[in-house]
Length: 225
Image (cartoon, rainbow, N blue to C red; front, side):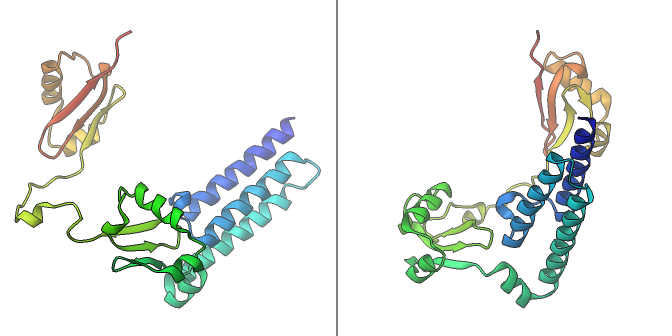
């Protein structure tokens, strides 16, 4: 039993490292060859962990080979646009200038029901509002509404809104982030004064405190038992 646990932990660590080396993309963002590598690595890790009669190297070596092949293909697609088109494919335009391209639907085995469903997911319930719809290599559908149907932005009204940066998490689950506090050009005395305004006496009693670029502190206290 101990041997099985150790073998499983070794293979688990190797798979985690392999996935970490492959990058931080989500499953839906993987290219086809990356998805194949991911599935094969999972299968190769299961067999040696279940059967102690199979040498551990029989699982480790194929995983390393697949990881090397994936990194090689990734490097090739990074350097060569032609190779990238061959390995990853090219995006398909399913709707062009407001018209459905039937040939592209058939080519990608994409029916009208799938298209309408994806448009609803993208908050575009009316297909008549779509100017372009592009099926990306990872299977995601990019939707571009017609100009008169897209949401308005401040630039349409010649308005320049104030700058909005990323908010800083000052307190997380009762723990003070001193680095973010210093980055916000605030000190601990200021923070304590702000907490007292909301009837919070201790940093440990704060669930989350976040400071936005305008200097407004959002605070939520922990639930009291």
